[in-house]
Image (tube, rainbow, N blue to C red; front, top):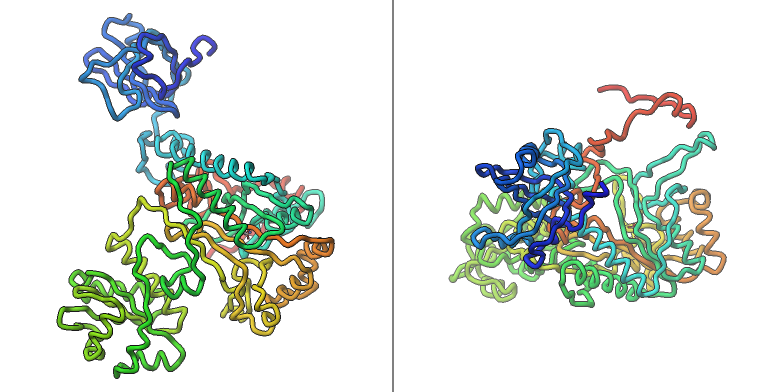
Length: 592
Ligand code: ASP
């Protein structure tokens, strides 16, 4: 290797390098024989360079060149020359030059490929994951993994510059509840005992605050043993931070600084800070989601004022039973939305629990179709009240508040896509604040923490949260980008008595809390400072920046949607002696 060690990369040569003798190392991306002249595209992570094996080279060299197959790993020595004008390729950074080859060394051959190494592979996921090391050679994957590295660097750089310490927390721990199932690791040394893998560094970062490391961060791997749902991975990465002596706005400002640095350094985009803030109630009322995509408007309006003047009993009875009637004006959609297409929208609403979706169209004369017959005599008031114009479609949803919001929100999201209302080049951030602290689980008939159980109720609820958990708002915040929840965090409880009361509300009796988080509660009795923090999903952020819709596209070695790795075939069975060491016996479930 010594002699054929590269002196340039496949992305670096330009016209100004003319006449230099260079050595390149890389992979054979293409090899074309044009009547005795070989054109080889050599590729590495920096780019591609055209290598030319001229007609007049010694026969041995020509033969070797002809034998190079896809993805052979080779070293070539040659002289840089300018391409003839007609051959200049403006799409390639190295497109002005080619390398006239003098020597080739095959560093390694390559078997027949399971799929071609294209810019973006369209082969199936199993093949891509089984041969991930090959898939990662594609230009798209290379760019995304490089982007990921830059994003991590930009986040780290900002945090380190602003006084944060990067501190690692253990991954063999007791348990950190984030609402998912723990992955367990059996202990060999302590028969019958298990470690849990962290669902997040939550408890440890709080302990670091008790220890006085008032600005902490970590690029943290987290593990949640969840069923394959949507785009989840069993392990994922979050940038986790925690600060002492802060209020909510301090945490938001730091996070905005990280995002601004990441976007500037990786995309050259200057973000406007501070980001917009919406309360949870407003986000639900206006967009029907706690992670609204604000790249398009179509906010909901209250239709209740028009109901008493009509004799539409469906809406009336919903209002009488404390429900709501919401309206969404879809500009210019009246003509395009036939009854059939509206039924499709209704089906979307129904999957979120709605019983139906009412509609009417705005015409120059008034209102038409759907439920318009009940509201015809209020047409002018409705048009001006809702700001609706001729040609608009008005969608109406009557239900209890939450169902009305979420189901109309789902319709809004669908319309955003169907009507092509989304400008994909825009990055639209917003904070959602003032979340409910607790959620009622109808199945379990119990209150649960909306985020996790270490978050602070807002001051005005401190006297009432135990007796009346429903209305309590917490000092919780989520960062939303283009309809994705990117980060969440909270100001934490740092008073052991208050923490115990919260455990009580979510059904954690004192003994159980002591057993599981006794060390945290105890630490609070040793001068724990007020603190708060947040974590943002690194995978998701990179995915959005890369313009992709699955985090698998930005994770080097992800699991497939069944939670397995087709490459190393994990999870795998283990040997009897290993199980014995761990004091374990496997009881296989019965086959159905
Ligand atoms: N531990 C939380 C999470 O992983 C984030 C936080 O509250 O800081 O979602």
